[in-house]
Length: 379
Image 1 (tube, rainbow, N blue to C red):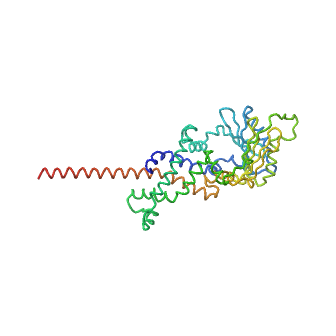
Image 2 (cartoon, one colour):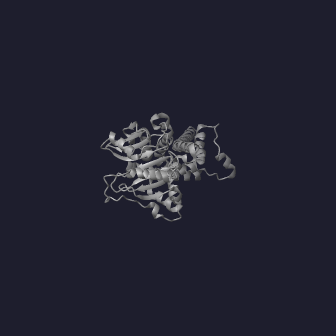
Image 3 (cartoon, one colour):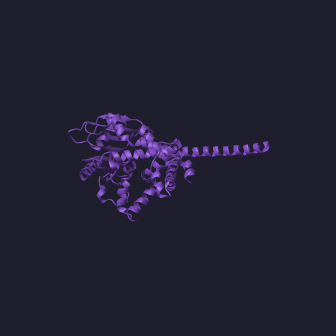
């Protein structure tokens, strides 16, 4: 089972693991490479989201804004605007309104391409999601079967099973790299796979929510709100609803370092605000929703009032990439991803080595039979 399931999923596991490693430090890499992601902190307040939308619409009048993102005071704000076939990501100084950078094909920049490979493994999304999901489940089964194979039967075998014998044949070193390191990384790799699956499949995230809440479902926090399309917008508006919601969310969540705003693209969709206490970390969020026509508060759900299940689901991404434990956690998850990518490779070498050994033994056996027959004929 361990061997043949490895053949089925090995290549996909290798690609998914390597792409995950490349993507894991994408924020730090982009901060180091691209100066437009940072700005000098201004003396005044940040521009309101309606003003950022006007700047984006001035450049692309026919575009539809899908996101407005605020980060820490020393970072540019980001506006995503769809012009049809192309989704632009505009980086704007939140104090002066100056356009710092226009990424004309945001979905296909390097790191988003890496993320797409991680999710879909070069396949179309519908097919790739199924293949990657199935391979991840198989990988989890392989890890369990590998643990059973590794488990020492006798007490004096335990030390040998926990150390790599470097001063021996390369095949033995390869075997130890597969089995010993595989054991050490078992729990972290299993967590990597499980957290990745829970972000991809609703049935698993709903199961986690149900189990973490002891079988209870809190309908109020899961309720979907809509804007009232029958309300007529007055010609004279003191403050735009999206700005009113922004000011309200910032007042109610004063420790916010990052705010993601969905401006309500569809007629019935509300304007949604997600406030995070740490920039580029997606845990412990406060969420707000308002009517896009009237500015009426529809939903206010601070993290302190969320159920255990919802809080756990909110930390899923940070757990998956390790940043919930800071830089050290990211490094641990990065190394676990590299080791997970190495396991199919070392496993393949183990299989090829055993196959070659069997062939050699068979060849020696055939040679012995021929020799005995020759000796008998000579006698």
